[in-house]
Picture 1 (cartoon, one colour):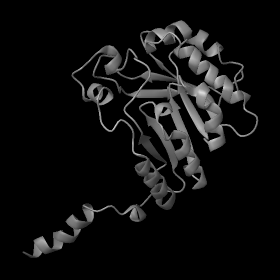
Picture 2 (cartoon, one colour; picture 1 turned 135 degrees about the horizontal axis):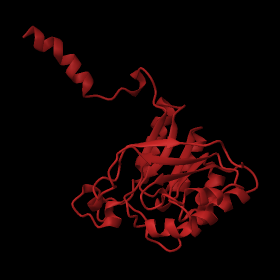
Picture 3 (cartoon, helix red, strand yellow; picture 1 turned 45 degrees about the vertical axis):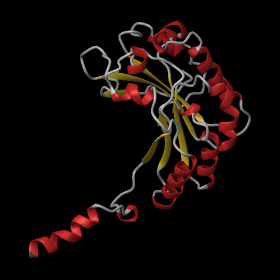
Length: 239
């Protein structure tokens, strides 16, 4: 009986959320703002037609499709209150399709939070100026190789051109604009084309150009969309 009374406060504490009592704050608060994408990539369960995974079904019929506006604003408020030094990252699935993206970034900046965006950049040209004016700090673009290689992997004939024009538009913005990094996942589909890929950006003032290398010695298979990665980032361009 005594043991039960002693354990009860611990059990109750573990069932509650005390963000102001954490021994250390997170470096990042990463958001999954939607279950939507405008591409059909070979390495993705949807692009591969692998219907046995939860990811496939989330991406083809999950409701709600987008994080509600009131929820993301609440997350921003709590992040600013409890973890003001943490970066707010928009990471999943394709945040450029999120209807509250620009508005929520603007609100986060009003709360003095650092904001970052990870994207395939297919819709970046349309939103580049609005994102810069909202105060976006960083954008990381995922590309898979030179145009014909990237387009074949991503399942869209204009996916590389759309991203490339969006990146160029950011660099043309006069005034504050987000820093741009580009990351390329090394796969069996683009190996042998990476030098040519890097040369496309040698005149761009990128923050970094990174290559993600799978540590697993097996081919990427449907249902295994998140293998371990190690990131190599060469010195910033231009070189």
